[in-house]
Length: 394
Image (tube, rainbow, N blue to C red; front, side, top):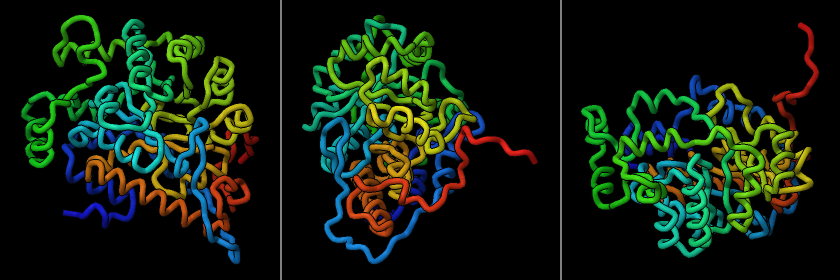
């Protein structure tokens, strides 16, 4: 058994999680849609950016603190909303929220979480953010927003890029469901992980608790899955931002933006912040990586609002690169899920420690003492051509 405090990288945490979590749930976290090209480029495009080393600089008294939506946080990293955290380990979202609270960074709970809004609120003290999927059943959405308000969620993260579900081949082949259907294949997967099974037997949280018991009609697993799949609203539009914000009465962060015109539209319709995100490469396969499009979105709306980046962050150096290109802060989803699978709350805490240490060291070696001073001067070169660069003839 690998001791969590001996793990040195997020990649190593992923390998430990792969050994400890049933295949269907691990591969839900570690997969993209169709060819997974965008999923891979989210990471590989970060590697094409080279940093500018500086020496003979006073590096005492370094600061990683910044603010998101006016609230001070200990480093420019937030926990992204990610479904099935509670299937990576028992009560996973509660454990991740506790780790984030102790670390002093925001935690975002997914609509499709295993632990409900109320579950997380009852087990934490710091206000958290709630991520909202807009569904056809607007009465359910209104109730969901009201539940987030009652739980004192301090912001809504409105995801705009899941009107139509991108096909993830691994999920289909693995027969993914929450809770898992008891087929010979799923039983065989779970039998390989007796400790995971024992922990799951010790909790009552096994399904999408933000939905179960909160929608009209009686639903078994099959009908609930069908209801959920049919509910993502293809008519979602920018005008919906306004009524959602009015209903919630607090800040609304729009997530899923890859286009500067879309970023402007979000601001025009009341968004308080933007998350540059391609859903971790799980929606439009072939879409650009988030770091590739970040500069043009910052150029368009960065002077009007806070711009965050999601998708592809695997280490502290990635955070520095995103900040250098204008992001105010970053989100991590898969690293959090890997931490849960590998070691529960301690695993998430260790992921945050790894990223913080890498972030601090990288900042220092770039000659900076304050994270707020990171900028384009810290970039040595970038092999990613701008999206609107003129084409050259062969």
